[in-house]
Length: 281
Image (cartoon, rainbow, N blue to C red; front, top):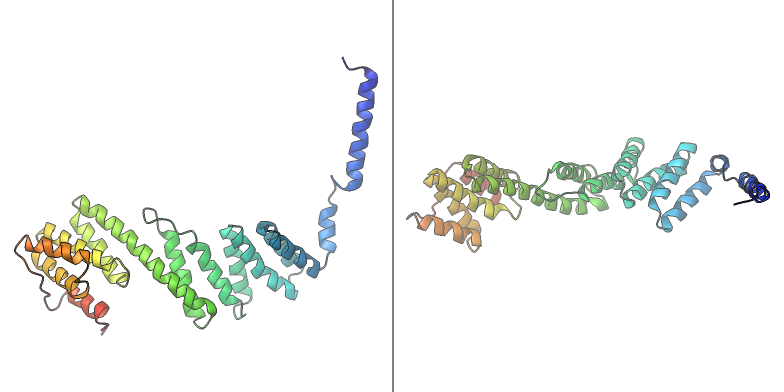
């Protein structure tokens, strides 16, 4: 059993500890006062130090604090774009988009505006999910990447944005192919045809074009549309004659005593003229 004297002594020790904590600022709000008394330059340097110490989330918060305290300073402008970058590095994509968007609203003609737009695109591009899932993020990435190339065509970011646009289109085409194969496998041939035609109409320069043509041959034959199957296989053969997809389509047709022949006019002649011959008019 603890004696009363020992309890009294323990109480005194705890009281001293609390007083000491108060004297050293454990329980006060002096930190906020100190921050508000610091100059914009000092706060900016604090944020830079946090970023160098691999603490981007804290850096973003510090840049935001500078912008709040000194909104009309030159450093506030720099802090806004740095907050966007820091949030992006921290994986906080919504915060990165918000800061970059604010920068574009305030400084649309600034040299760093192109980077702000590119950063918004990256927040979507870096979170693209696999083709089995919803592609809303992929479409947002495509829209923002396209915005980079349209608004800032001579910037350092436009070329990389274009490369990412090509990859994004390939991803979206992959989604259409996945859905099309699903319908084809389950005998929903018209729905499958619609999906494969989307690939040819909207994503014809992607790597999915040869397979899309072959899958259309499969779907048309299943629907009994032999003329359409023959024409499609002919377009496939003229442009991807050495591919596995043409070999598969050729085998399907010859099993039915059919030969690939391209008919003049119609959807596939239009696709052939626009995509493979580069004649859009």
